[in-house]
Length: 270
Image (cartoon, rainbow, N blue to C red; front, side, top):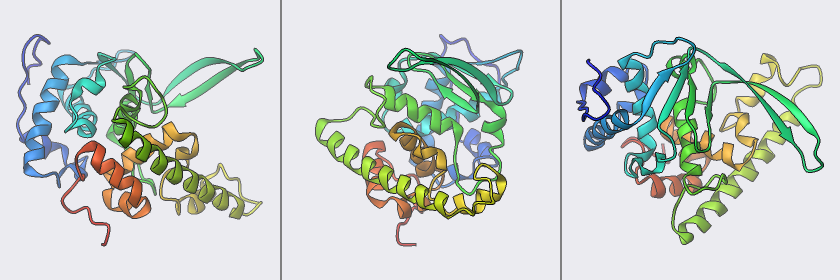
């Protein structure tokens, strides 16, 4: 494929999604009309967003298409206006380091060092680790780093980082009630899990994975409501069955907001 100038309109057909199902099998069950709509939205996304490699990484057309498919899925029926505060996606070959300073309420400065698979910067780019996009690896909690970071962009689209994307006041009230209830229940379950881990096992070690694997979401979801929303959005699209069973009321809110029940096979009774 010859990548067009950004002033030209790109077109994609269903064959690009067919190729993507090898690495993203959850795309295979999209409704036919949604597959066509996703291709159109991906083409628009790729025409207006730059996807650039960091530190010399060459970003191929296949990489751009894979990122676009996952980024566009949450806004399939909402449109790209929700992604209006940025124009670039930066792709690292693997996990990347970030260094920050945090100043608390009394002026104490703390140096923070983190290794990340993805980051969504308010008013700035989305940053991704291609290794984590292409090969997320085995996990008891199906996830997706692209959907996660673009869920943060959705959350921030109204200027508030509160785990609630832009919506009407009435919908927002119901959303926040459901989100808070699900978040608090998840945190309580995590507390129970952590208290059940034997004292001779390091909770940060792989030995503890058997305990954490019983949770409905990755433990990172307990960080705060914003991260809970992003992790929940991953599960909603990648594993709709599991998400609907674990969080039926929040699932209903997600279906209403995203205007899609991810796949025809999603069934809370199965």
